[in-house]
Length: 299
View 1 (cartoon, rainbow, N blue to C red):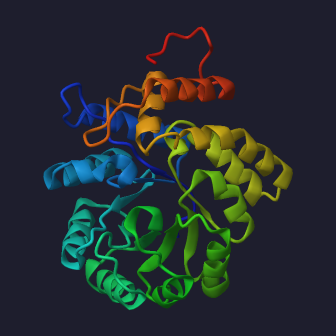
View 2: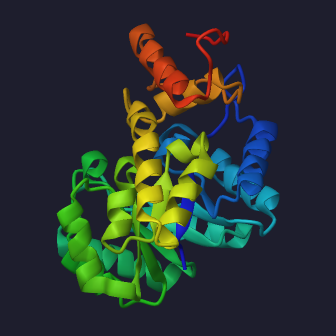
């Protein structure tokens, strides 16, 4: 159900830090034109911890409106509160989202039984297809493959975004779940390896910049052109790594601004990148061919 390129969409802000609704609509149209399969607004890359609930649901509303059925919208709805997460899913459903991405509860560090009970309740009561999101580096808890396999039996649990960084763990998820759930990469640098073990796509950060290239890699793989897919992987790898020179989404927003996409600054507690790291980022964009050494960019 959820395969291909899903972009963890950045949230554009105005000069005074408010939501830039016109730019947000422009970004959605950019991805429609590129052929992106789906967008994931209100996730970490979207800076969801920094905005109000009113902004949260306005962003979903705008993305759904502008998408107009041309791509899927999987709204970030997960929190470390089960009841709040259910409310978020229901509101996203009412706004027209195609599904909800729900992260493992952070900070309170539930057990595997707690994770199972949490996600089952979200699936039972939320009334939207769910993309589970496992990112232990941010949440402090790792959802084990055996837990994913138990959850995959629920008809509304349709995908898992795996960002544990462990190919072994991801392979075990596929081994246990098979086609019952779509396995998606949560890290651009391992999308190609994940495809090779049964993955179906990626929730991408670098796709904010070069969606057509990520799509080309996935298309090559799906056609059986392993050499072509591998070539795309190694072309994308340095740029994908550059997106994490500092904390996501600081580099990707800096890159988008360097490329004239004008998405504004990050919100506190995130700040602009250090000058030396902006230079490294600019060098990565230049090496990729996105800018020329002589292009005037803000570094």
